Length: 286
Image (cartoon, rainbow, N blue to C red; front, side, top):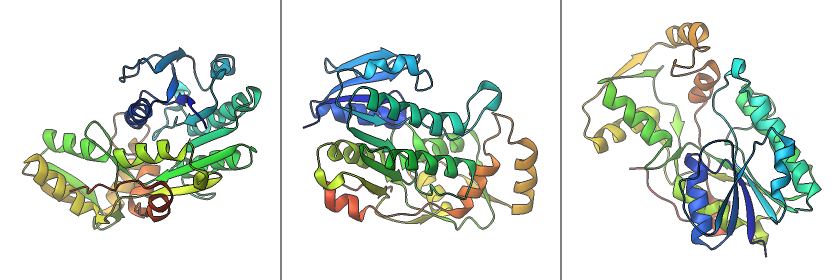
């Protein structure tokens, strides 16, 4: 039985919920953090300073019997050294080395729906990180969630905040690209229930919500539930591509070229295998 977890990315939106679920299920957890403190307060939680890019600081995995590796980014800031190559590939390689150096056999990894060998930089680096995990010789479980939503972050909050600031909400093209948003509660439950479940060993799971929506439908639901009167404005694709190509290097610009490409591709997947193996619950986005 694995009982002591080393957690990376434990101060973020997803990591906070997974940490909360771990503590709820009486796991002892070491949380690796660079500067932020975890929002979950528990006698079972120990904070250790360090970085997934600083191999010297990863000696703190000693005493743990498994790793949950969540670190990832959705946008690069190259001049600050924040790149997909570093935070997806190099960070995962470092965590695998730390696991092996400390005789840790179990490794649970956060990937993304859409990870593939040929795609955007985000997708290809997510895929390469997966390959590192699969070929590591460790007992792994890899999760590929769709867009994640919750009360404190993710898709619902991001779009809801946009609606609070702007009554006109743009969408690109016809707005009919499809998504299957998954609850943060489902994701956290899946991670924790996979730890000691032999059915989950050396397996990749997709995590999606119970229903598929178009992007325009998502906007309508969020506007309805937040009580906002919004007007949806279509942006022709040629305009979007020009704007993004010229401005996506600005951190303040809301979308990058890679993100636009993935948005138009949609993000659909099911959770049937994970639901069957892990007995996780599904929650309606509406």
